[in-house]
Image 1: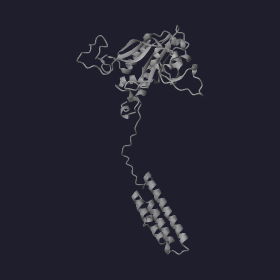
Image 2: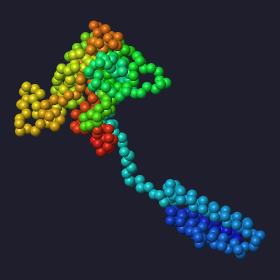
Image 3: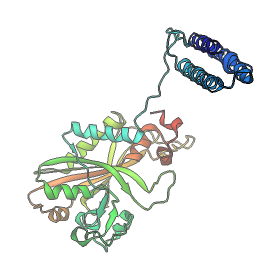
Image 4: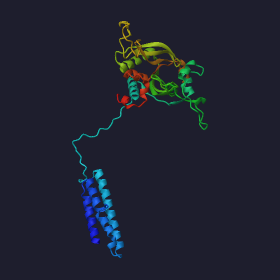
Length: 363
């Protein structure tokens, strides 16, 4: 019986090792350890074995069954992993490889990079600042006192202060910045002119979300300070930007406006990127006729607002320790989503934040 058992064990291990596929392994399992297998047959004949030999034979049967079972499991693992020349896992080297999905730059990030690259080529450098600000830097340093009516337009989300937290700078409350302009004040406090900077970043305002508004969006602001800077320098920089961003045939106009931190101030418009010729943006163009359909983007006006700009208010210079009689500067600010919507013909700001791959794959 012992010799018979050793022969079955050796035969089984050899058959398992040479099994070239899962079917062959299953055949070996049935033959040796199945319900009607050779090992099972020996167990059924244990009654015929002399009592004094039963313990040893029983031990040898269990060891043989355990070795065969382990060999079956190991062989199945090696076949699944495609290990060894007899694994049955064949590779066709002529087949093309599996394509991996490649990520893309988000259109907002792409637009920020393009805006910053243009101004870097004009001598500006990138500066960033905190998204959690104090009332002083978000409002007062920029000539927006508490009672100023324009403060409502720049209001934002206030943060609850921790009882263990140290008081804010100048004893002011913490809030989420409503524009990137606070970075201008912070930078000027620590740096002497001349300099030219652009400030990209997120801003927050309690606006109801719709096709053209969001409670969180992105801005890029610019600031240039030095001796002898004039409004014509501002116009030249922004004209260069508009033509490089929207095309060489883009026209620009400045409309008088009001911002607390610039004086004089202007709203900056560009010729409509959709219907450039529907509305007379120069005296040589014919006006739109009654049978022509008005542009859905500009409403037939021929102009689109893209940013606010102006010469830095002398009060802002005083707040940061500059002498307004010795320095001058200009500033501008634009909404990144607005620029991206015009550049790529997008009609709903919410598309930027929904993470719909069908939309994002277009960029």
